[in-house]
Every structure is written in structure tokens, then in C-alpha cells.
Length: 413
Image 1 (spheres, rainbow, N blue to C red):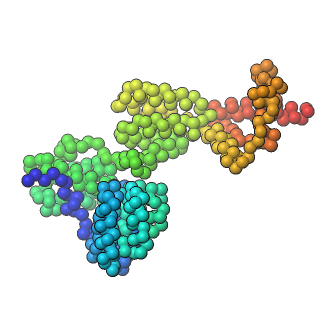
Image 2: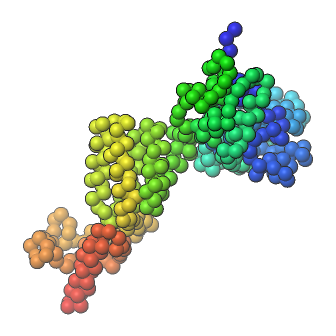
């Protein structure tokens, strides 16, 4: 019979917390999860972090160490009947049951309503696992009954530790692998130990002599894994990092995060985020950037990938090195805040559509004439506070000249 599953990660799954690779901040000497196990005590918790860094391993290792009764469910795959079975089983035992649940952020209301009373009564102790930020993605009622623990990315050394452990396992009998191949797998893994195991296993079984070389690894995969779960936080972290790098005028970091997004081949998200950055972070300091963004988006759409990277790279470099200003959108936010708090007033009569006393600015020198535009109760309100960055310096001069003329006109009256 042909075995069609990947088994190495399962074979190497740690049986106790001592076998877990990484996460020393939780499992190291005198750290919280180790102390819970040593004190023979378990509380409901949520383990969150990127894929392949040990969430399931820790959950299973803890219940094995404690010798407690447990069941595993997936909030996406398992239906309400599966949850019913666990609840009924928990009622049979005085000490209840531990429920290990993957993808907990996807648990729907029916399942939550079923689970909450059992958590409250203590019949079920929950170990939830998710790649999403639980503070945003998990129902507050569930979250408030659990302790939250963030797992950290594994280091390259920890990935290598796992690979070396795999190479001496009974499952990969007779494997021959050099240091360069191990380093290459670690480099391609994206700090995901499960992926590293899967790549090693594929390389081992794809050869006739079990010799895993650099060339064998490259023939299977030459691109690193980048965490791009578009429904999770990792993907939006990269988009956020792109915007913050451009805002911070770090052209190298900006191009790095652009490259990661291009690797995910999601041009629409890149287009939307760059359009926002143009007006949120560059704004009046370089008003031409908006048209540059539209031109680059048009060019990228026209040529498609991989050539789309060329106009996008040029644009992002320009945006990172452009002077920055957020004064315009902050001015609008202040105006919106006034509306939300009821600070408003009637449109002055002389600028209403029916007015016969409106002074048409184009009929006057310099296309300007002093007259009131804001409501009477807001006549001295100032939303816009100009900066001297880039081209906004000239707008600031115009603004200040107008304000001076307004003041002079009032004094003359």
C-alpha cells in the first residue's frame, strides 16, 4: 500500500514538554507552562503565533505530561455534533476533559454557546490554538475565560536543531545529508519547523540513495516560505510594515516588504495600500505622488507579474524618499471629530445656493476676497496646521498670507 501522507512531523512530535523545540519563555526552567506541568495543574488557555512554531506540540506535550483525558477538534472542520460528543463525554467524568482546539478564531456562535457553560463549570479545560491575534479575532466571552500565551518565531538555530534531530530518527534510515543542505532547508523554511520537516522528508524519499544534497533541495524548492495567510495577522503585518517603512523613509525596508507582498502575488492589496500611503503619509509635501501612484498601478496592471515589480519598485523607492506630511488628513479628522461631538452650525446665508450677496473671488485681485465661510459659531476654528515639508512649504506660505489678509481686513473694519 502506498503511503500518501507526510509522516516525519508526526513521528517527531514531542511526547513531553522537554522535547519541544524553542519557546523557552514559556517552557524554560521556572517558566509558566513548565511550572503548571510540574505542579500538575492546567487552566484554559489560548496559544497563538505563526504556523509551525509549536502550538500543537505544546498542547499535546502538556496533556501527555499531565496524563489527563483529552480530545482534539478543529473549529473549522468539526461540526456542532462533534462538539456535542465532547461535551457529553466531559459530563461523565468528575474531573472533566481537556479540549484541544485548532483554528479557535473560526469557532461560530453555535459552538461558542455550547462550549461556554462547560468552561464556566470546569467540565472542559480548553487549549485553543490560532495564528490570529486573539485580542482581535476571538470572541471576548471565550477570551475572558482563557489565559493568552504568545509563541515566538523559532530561530535558525532551533530549526537546525530540529532538522538534526530528524536526521538521526529511525524514520529516515540511512540518510546522508551535509551541513549545506541542512542550512538550505532552514533558510527556506521561513522559521516554520513543520515545513522544514516536510521538505527534508520529501528530499529523502525523492532520491534513490537517500543522499540529500543542496541540488536535491533546490530541485524541490528554491523559494523561502513567507507567512502569507490572507485571513490572518501575518499578511496584514507585512502590509503594515510596508506602510510604516515608507512613512519612516527607510527605502531598503520598504523594498523588502514590497518584495514579500509581490512574492504573494496579491497586487490588489499592494495597490490599495500604496494609494492610502500617498495621501495619508506623503500628502501635501508631494501632491504629485497621487498621480504617480495611479500611473504605476496602471503600468503594473498592464504588464502583470513578474514585470509589475519594476514600476512598483520605482514607485515605492520614490515614496520612501519623498518628503512626508499628514497635515491634510489630520485636518479632516479634526473636522469629522467636531461633527461627531455635535460641534456644527448653519451655512452662512451669503454662501447658500439662493444667496444674492455672495462675493465671487475670481472677480477680485489675486482671485481672493475676504468673506466668511464657516458657520457663525465656528468662525475662528482652525483645522489645518501646515508643515514646511517639501511642496507644502509653498502651501503654508499661501495659507499664512490669507490668514494675515483676513486679520488685516478685520482690523480695517
